[in-house]
Image 1 (tube, rainbow, N blue to C red):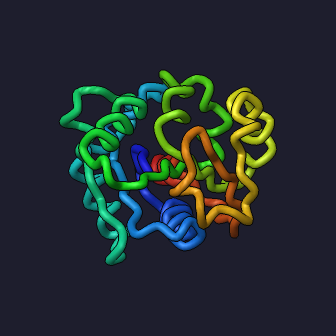
Image 2 (image 1 turned 180 degrees about the vertical axis):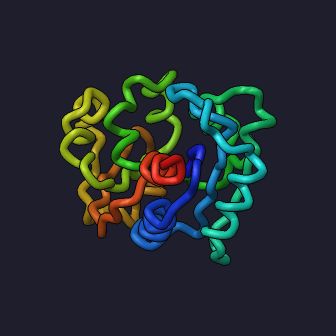
Image 3 (image 1 turned 120 degrees about the vertical axis):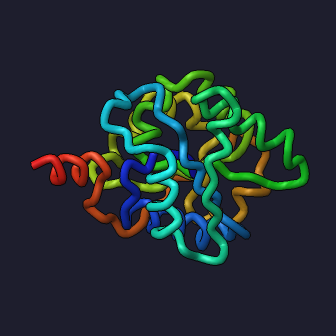
Length: 183
């Protein structure tokens, strides 16, 4: 599960916990990114500060917090995921993303390559379910969508394969938290 986590909040933890439970994952890795190439990084807190905040939030024995992406020299998820499958060939990874990301997934560099690299779990976010499921990427990947009832087996599926997880929604967003701090 990657992101800038600027700042991390309870919605991120809920997504990680739901994914771990419903996908029957051994662990969830929080990949704190140096920055998002599709967003302005002007208000981005230093990586060390975001790492500390994520560690405090994700204090769970089966959650790991890492910032290895900074050493890869690329801000692109496709590069990150390719690194993971090469580095850990015996691990069955699942990429976890929020529905807000699926809504704009077709704008990501090599998004089709990402979908072909590992299964994807899309976790519902307030206000994004319909946008995500009607997005160009969701339509293009419609044939590889798995029913939510089979989420527990997603890690064993060959990509492209994805599932949309509905869950309890929390209204928090990093953008709203930053705006409230600025006011």
